[in-house]
Image 1 (tube, rainbow, N blue to C red):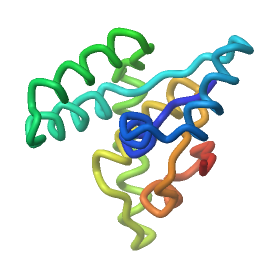
Image 2: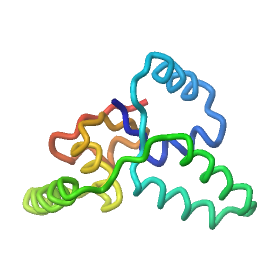
Image 3: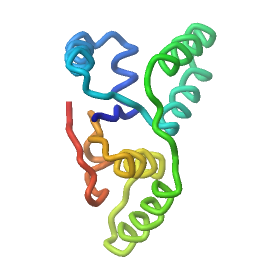
Length: 131
């Protein structure tokens, strides 16, 4: 089970053929692929900034309609609180939205796929792949 981070989704929107092939292969083998609500929020934020706003909004809406969106549950909240505290004590950081994305992936037992490893690598026990 794989969870795509926001940067990966943006790469798909920009037409990354190699990435699309990898995701198609996963889908053809029946491996679940999802995103988090936080990625959805980031995608809409970007769409509202786009020069071709309506086109960007439609792209996000269609994408979200056709992919599973992982919920932000009480377990996700607990992991966020625990991991945020852990990182602060260790003097490490993770951008807050990325920490939220990582905690949702962990709570739902998904592997997070990213192209931006540095934003996620400090999150404890996060199963992470860089594509």
